[in-house]
Length: 117
Image (cartoon, rainbow, N blue to C red; front, top):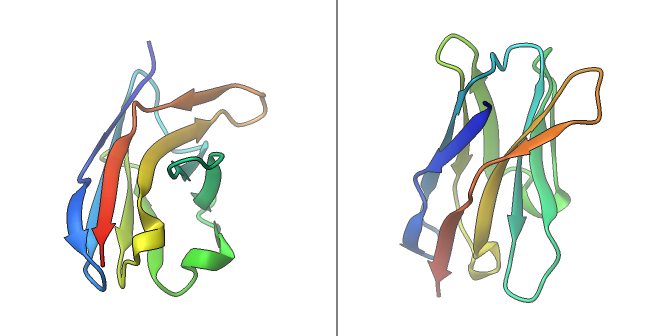
């Protein structure tokens, strides 16, 4: 049974930083793409950042230069370092695993990030 568990969300002031972590169990993440999505109030879920099994990264334009995604295959975790946070970054952040070579996706339960102005 695959599980993704996020941690690290919370309340922070604008220009502050948070570090989100996602721990996977039931599957080794090494060959699979890992991503962070977010869903703000009244908005659709959107891709924030992705790191492939080969280590390539891609970011939404709105977070480039502020957020960094990284993976630790030995620890079976993926992290999202978020700096210079803005109120518009307020959302529930979800960890995602996209199974290599398949259309299967797994999701975490989400962690709330709230940025106050």
